[in-house]
Image 1: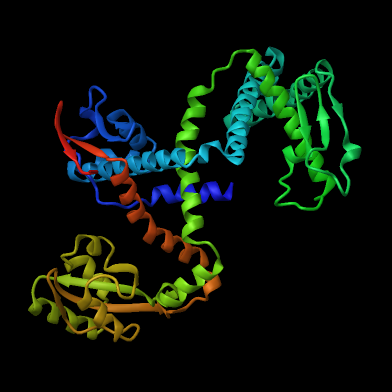
Image 2: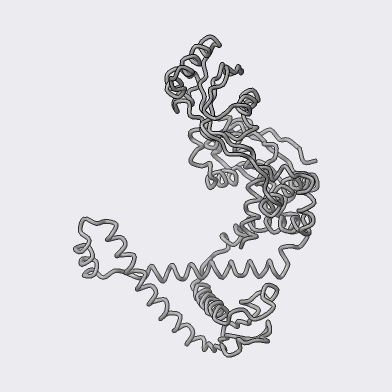
Amino acid sequence: MDRMKITSHLLKILVLVSVFIAAPQQVFAASQVLATIGSLQVSSDDLNAAMASSPFATQMTSMNENDQASLRGDMLRRLVAARLLTLEAQKLGLDKTPAYQKEMENFRLGLLYRFYMDKLRERIVIPADTLAAMKKQFKGDAEGLTAAKAGYINGQYQTLKLATLQDMLKRDRTELYEDRIKPGIKADTVLMEGNSFRITYGDIVDIGEHPTLPNPEWVKEQLYNRGEMLLAAKAAEKEGVDISGKLAQYEAERLPSVMLDAKTGEWIPDEKTLQAWFDKHPEVAHIPERRHVGQLVVATRQEAEALRARIVKGESLFTLAGKFSIDPVGRKQNGDMGWIVAGRGMPELDKTLAGLEDNKISEVVETKMGFHLLTILEHQSGGQKTFAEVRDRVRQMIINEKLPPYLGELERNYQVSWKVIKARNEEVPQQTGK
């Protein structure tokens, strides 16, 4: 699961040159093809669905058209990148490996299991007299009533679930062989079987991760969970549940991650690769100084000098910033700019801050924004982290270096064709993948 989380994160950091889409989301009355990637496509429906599920979905309405277009363009590139990785994974047969097939089967069983258990829970109804008693007990306490109802349903669900599973085990003539869980157990040792299923030790324990027998109680727990899932999944199948859509969606999301796993293994074959990159880029472990900064900005040097004189005599820079600063954010915050990392922001200001003592007022600093007065309330000194402390960051930065050129290579191999929306119901084909 950890590898799945890592590779899902990698898909989110595919930062490539954006393809700008001039029309905002709502103009797509009918689905249109935005890009073709070999035998695959990305449509406006695909893009709209991806945008709707992105962290930016709630912010889109407050953005101008240029910002919306930029985000949609970036999302389009990510979708195309995912299609490229899918095609390459299929070409290499990564979707045919035993490990991948096992993962897909487990996901399929999990979907069926959840469907069946949800239907089981839906059968529970709180009796009228019990509900009336709850309402009387928690009169005026809506949260208490909700908790009481949930507690009742959960208790009844557990009872119903246990009874249902016991009935399934009996009807399937299930046999349990817990006594076989002992040192020396083999992957093909059968631990549970019935008329419709069989569970071996290798089905529930990864021999590669556990070359010797782990805690027997843990093994038993995995065995019971597996048996429960198989029985419930079989019952759901008998009801004709269709999970093909969700299964296809999962595979579309998972295959790119599998491909990235494989490439990451090539790019970073061992710990020495990480250490070598770190030795060449020690700056990755540098912790820059941070300063809590106060600032006042005015339009003329004369005004800045006059305000500085008042501050030197004892007036507060922050009080004056709230009255006179031409920086709207700074004025709203009474000049408190929060913590600023050294080396970021305007060079003129950073240079001044680097030589400024805490709680001292700076000389007037001129920038294109105006004339500034600065002060540092407190600061946190910089430092250097060890390789062990930045190992994960080093790994990510290697991937960030390798991924864009690799995707560019795939784009050329699979002849990506872009069709950028120009206006309502108009398309301008562009061939950039050839």
